[in-house]
Amino acid sequence: MSQLTPTITSVAEQQSERRRVPRIPFKATSVVREAGSSQIVVAQTTELSRLGCFVQTATPYPKGTRVHIEVTEAGTRFVASGAVAYVTAEGMGVVFSLVEPDNQAILENWLSRTPRRPDRHSFTAKAAIKDLGSQIEQVLMTRDLSEGGCFVKTAAPLPKGSRILVRITHAGAEFTAIGRVTDNVSAEGMGVAFIEMEPNNRVVLEKWLVAETSVNDTSTRLLVGGLLLLVAAAVIALIALMIS
Image (tube, rainbow, N blue to C red; front, side, top):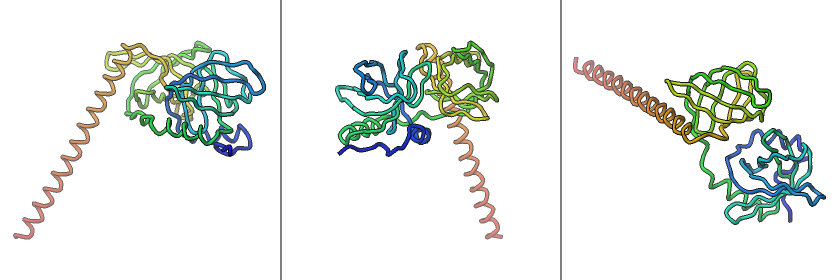
């Protein structure tokens, strides 16, 4: 018997729920076909959740198109029916509407073996953000940083899905990557996911993260050490009081 994953009454309702469901990076070949058509789009899935996936393609179907999708990874094939929830310059988000039990098991297995999301570190640095669509550039400041992306403070965030060029300058070094604005858009700024970077830029990013981890570890040790000294002082004072 077929299983709805989850039960929905409209693409809009499921897209709203999708925002609350964690998505994880996932690289696999995808074949997407419009319902009732023999024409297919062969592309790559780059993100996956229990509700849907993101398909990277230069020829996305229009929003709302009902589709049949097959995702193949390491010889295992997952099949589902769904609809195009949103379209960006990079591809299309597909929300699943009907998943058979055997395919549901495949999906859950893929999601369970995916590593946890990267740790974020507080990180303040100058960030030049260029919208690759409009070519408009803003010079902003980062709030945090991880191996997967960053949060940039701005009163005028770009729309979700915008493809951007990110250039971060910190401690005499520069990091550059192609990014995409994520769901994390608020009055405080916007979340950015790194999707393309050269090896030399990855080296810069890793050095920054290692340095931040070291600073955090040192701060933790100092805090713990300070607390231990306070406890020791309190114990000594108590002993002195008992003796006197």
